[in-house]
Amino acid sequence: MRELTARGIAAIGVAFPACHLLKGRARFCLSAAHTREMLEKTLATLDEVGDLLRLKYSNQNCWLPPNIKNNNENNNE
Image (tube, rainbow, N blue to C red; front, side):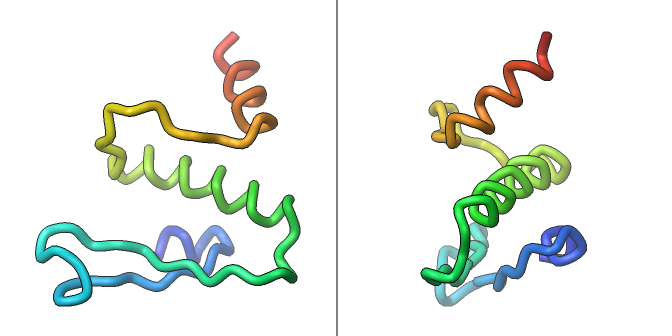
């Protein structure tokens, strides 16, 4: 949560007993006042922090907005 806060993203950590003992969660509050750009920044930041902290463990393809996919593809060239 500290890393997200440092990057300007507000999130609440959720721990046991609200979720599995070994699997914490992050909770986000969305509203109609959030713009598409804000949501895309949040997703990009979560992707970045997930890599930094090695929190990603799914073997399935994740969904990303088209402009984030395009940016990632351009960075790999």
